[in-house]
Amino acid sequence: MPEKTARSALVLFSGGQDSATCLAWALDRFDHIETVGFDYGQRHRIELGQRGVIREGITRLFPAWASRLGLDYLLDATVLRSLGETAMTHDVAIETAASGLPTTFVPGRNLLFLTLAGALAIRRGIGVLVGGMCETDFSGYPDCREATMQAQEQTLRLGLDADITIATPLMHIDKAATWQLAHDLGGDALVRLIVEDTHTCYLGTRGARHDWGHGCGTCPACDLRARGWQRWQAGR
Ligand code: ZN
Image (cartoon, rainbow, N blue to C red):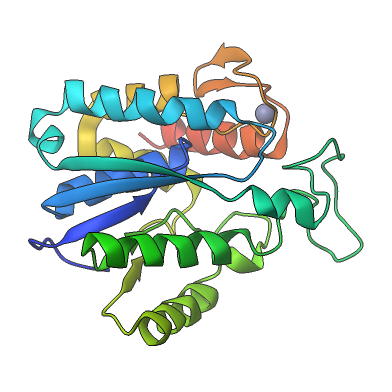
C-alpha cells in the first residue's frame, strides 16, 4: 500500500460505500486525485447519479481535500450487458448460480474496468489506480481477490509499458472496519456523507433511510452494509 506521496491517483469511483471510502483514502495520501466511473448498464443506475453528489459533498466539507480533487470521467462499459444476463444488469433473481458464484457476479467486470482505468491513467500521467476490491466479505467474486489484482497490475505494467500500481485499501478489512476507516479519515462528517449519499443497494431504488443509509434493507448488499454498520456501532 503506497505511503503518503506527491503522486497522483485515479480512483475507480462507483458511488457506493467502498469506493467513496477509497476516494477519501486517496485524498488523504495523494496530491492530485481524479475519479472514473463506469456505466455498464447496471440496474441500480442511481449509484452513478450519487457520484457527483458525493464529490460535491467532499468538496464542501473538506477544503483541504477539495484542492486535490480533479476531473471525473464516466466511461461506457455497456458492452458487458450484451455478453449475457446477470442480476446486476438484467431482471434476474439474486441467487447462487450453477457455477457456485452469485448471479450478481458480472464476468469480466473488474478486469475490464481496470484495463480501461489503466488506459485512462496513462493518458492522464497517473501511476496509481485505487479500487475498493475486497476479498474479506464479498461473495467470493474472483475478480475482487488480491491474487487477481496482483496479476492485473502485472498485466497493465507489461501491456502499457508503464509504472502502474493498483492500490486496494479495503482488500483485507471487513465492512465494520470500512466504516471505521472512513471515520479515521474524515470523522463524523465523512461517515454522515457516506451514510446519506452513497448507494450500495442492488435494487435501483434509494429505499427507506436506515441508520446505515438508504436501501431496500434485504438484498445481499444492504445486508452486508447493515451488518457492518451494526458491528462497527457495537464496537465503538
Ligand atoms: Zn438492497
